[in-house]
Image 1 (cartoon, rainbow, N blue to C red):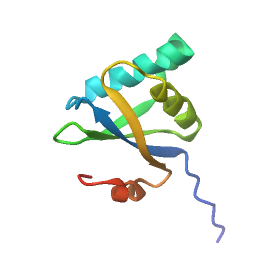
Image 2: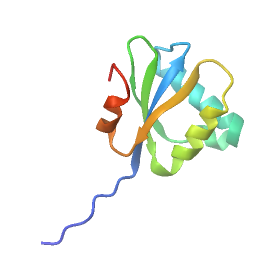
Image 3: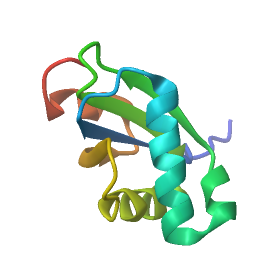
Length: 104
């Protein structure tokens, strides 16, 4: 029996948000706007999933391709508009984000 190595193409990022945003669409728009501002119109269509937004709107978790992590993090780091997303933790393993703070 031949075994294949597990390939990890997904990457997970946990962000804090200020001011809070409870809508997935608000978070997605903030990320798309940041990508457009930093890298142009085609970057705004970068594939990502909003997996979780906390009930109080202060945190969220997104999933993206591992090759897009630096682009997303860089775009959000330069964002000056509201809501401001700050990277708390990132990992190729979703459960490792749980110790980043309360709520998930």
